[in-house]
Amino acid sequence: MLAGKAPGEKVGRLSAEQAEIARLTRENARLSKRLDTTEAALDIMGKAHALLESLSERADSDDKRGNADPCLRVDDR
Figure 1 (cartoon, helix red, strand yellow):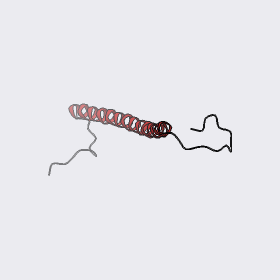
Figure 2 (cartoon, helix red, strand yellow; figure 1 turned 120 degrees about the horizontal axis):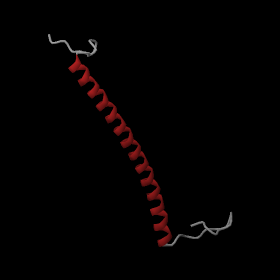
Figure 3 (cartoon, rainbow, N blue to C red; figure 1 turned 120 degrees about the vertical axis):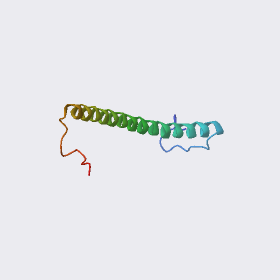
């Protein structure tokens, strides 16, 4: 759009093709940002899942050995 124009130089109306390129460029930037956000969220969810899985496995092995933390045990009343 403004490529090749000097500062202060009058800019004419965009052609249909230029307007479409500008629209697609904006949409591409918006979608790239959304993709980055989604990938970060998935990374966090994966790490949370791994942590919970690790805690669950540790709790299972502690229960089998009888080493479960009494503070975490649910009373059967």
